[in-house]
Image (cartoon, rainbow, N blue to C red; front, top):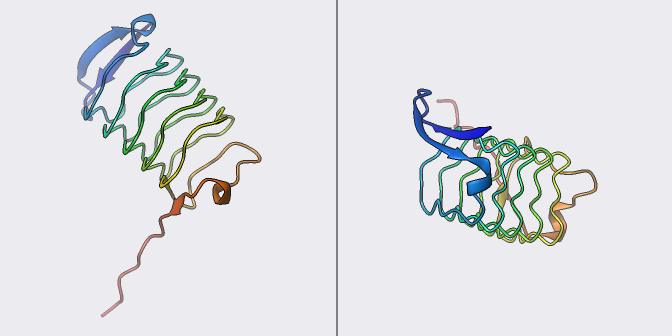
Length: 139
């Protein structure tokens, strides 16, 4: 089953075979809503990429570089993030339920109260940054 990278409007921008994605380079790419479900993205590079709302459920992201990527609202359920580079990544509203995050580097990663982490994950052990919504003063 191929992976379709779609625009926000739903237009298919790119179609890739899941097996051809290992080590792929998506440096600074804008891929909001992309569907990488169950894809093998080991060693892939998503440095500074826009991945808002992307679906990585069940994806293999072993040693992937997701530094400073925007994964706001992304689905990472059951994703394998073992040894992934996540420094400065935005995980606000993301779902990492049942993800394997063993040895992943989270330093400086942003999250909010809606971010879902794997059972037993402690944000205080990873030097992560809690982002809180600011409410403007009524006037």
